[in-house]
Length: 265
Image 1 (cartoon, rainbow, N blue to C red):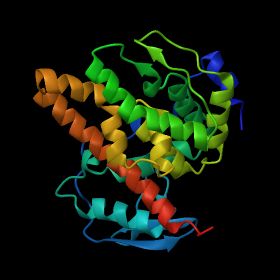
Image 2 (tube, one colour; image 1 turned 90 degrees about the vertical axis):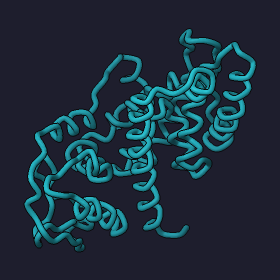
Image 3 (cartoon, rainbow, N blue to C red; image 1 turned 180 degrees about the vertical axis):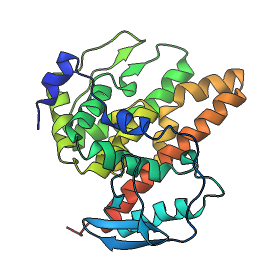
């Protein structure tokens, strides 16, 4: 594996997930299949459409690592109407991204997650009002305590938006922790949760079963929810948040499907 910290400091910004997702931005195709099922195949499980293995936008066979995950993806294909709408298939989109992007360049995805850790949401605190300060501490301090106790990484906090450099030792420990989670589907799920929440530490807490996806989502929106409580909620913003929450749930479901198939220690 490349030296993630050196790449981070050099400002390198490869993102194979974004490149793979770009292939999915096409006009909605008509549904071309009737029957959907799943079967065990080479390297895992495949979703079959009228008996033929489903393909990714990059024309690779869509292979899922567990039968449970294949069942979830198959259900998304089965739920399509006259057209196939990727917006309603978050698990399938994540799987396509893994096969077409993450599996080929896992180090680049780890680097992206580590970049978030280097300026993590949980490290930037409000200095006022008192109520918001208390809510941030209540939601975020236990996660930082878990990271310190479970991973050994100690992060530095800052008030306001002034950048604070995190200790290289802390980032090295997070990098090592990520390296042990380099399985493409697990790594992709962590990336999705990180980018949606703005926090690599929240994503790791979900993966480590310290937080549920709902708890991490609430923690990621402490500031936003504070503002909503004072000024009300914008309908368009609420709709966008609902879409992101669906993607967050899909990433968590991917982790659940992976962990359900993992051997008991």
